[in-house]
Length: 241
Image (cartoon, rainbow, N blue to C red; front, side, top):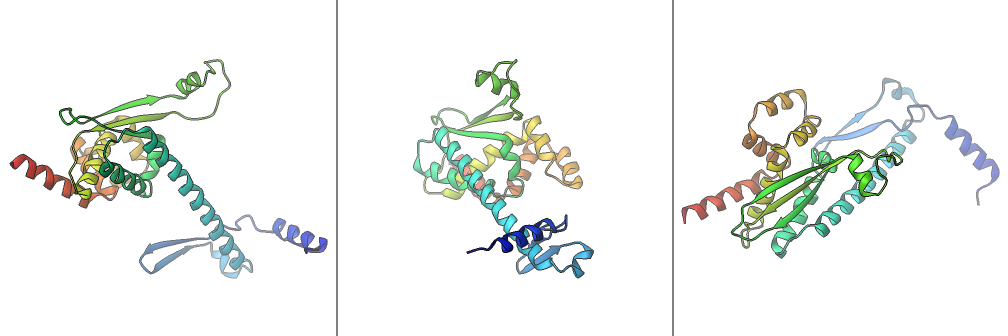
């Protein structure tokens, strides 16, 4: 049982916290190495242990929210896509989980990706449809005179592909990675979104690339270089036969 005096004391302690309380960050720079970001005055602060503990708690809660958001979005993508083969479906599920966990994957939350398998005699291609906030309001029935929702627009990106590789998940992953990376690399709006995630040097390099070079660069940035290599090898072997 918590006494009234304890509650009063706890409330007073929370109110007396410094404005910087909970701002300490621990960053893992590589395997077995952690870097702590703190202020010079933290060295003599009596609250540093509580501050670090609170920072970790806030970080864990943020990760849990981000993971839930990611899983909900992936579930919606799978639900609204049209995938006819279990092999491609399992590869797509893993692909989405990996890209939304990558450092650059945050740009994808401004886009809605949908995937469709098409007949083998069709060509693979993609379709980008920008959807503005006004369009979203019209869909909701609010019209131009409706109350502003405050939501920004997004882009619906439809990726269609007809090729797959039986019993070769890495090649299938590479194929999906190529189609998605090409979708983003060939669209000016997506390119501007990517720019915001890059350092100055990376952005200057990316600007000088053509679409194919940007596609390959983005594939590596998303962490699918090995999968794309497997995809290229399988594609080359098919052409030879």
